[in-house]
Length: 87
Image (cartoon, rainbow, N blue to C red):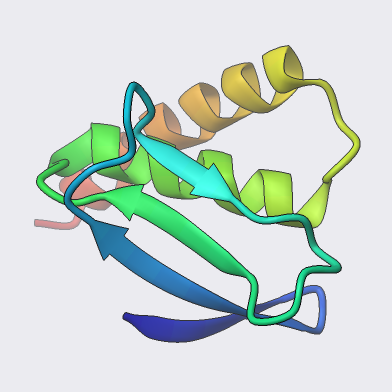
């Protein structure tokens, strides 16, 4: 568990073993002690995608889920490819 800041708001980033049928969850930005939860055990590009997805929700709470999903997949794909070129 660690603390992160997105758009000046503090979040708890927490990796948890179980989230039902979900890979991640983001609390409402106005929630006290708000958390972004990511299913532990995710690896590689999928972990990056879910982390981006939930951070996008934190930043753009009112944006449609479909847009968040597509943006997260695109960003993760490009970042993963670019990161692996540095190895």
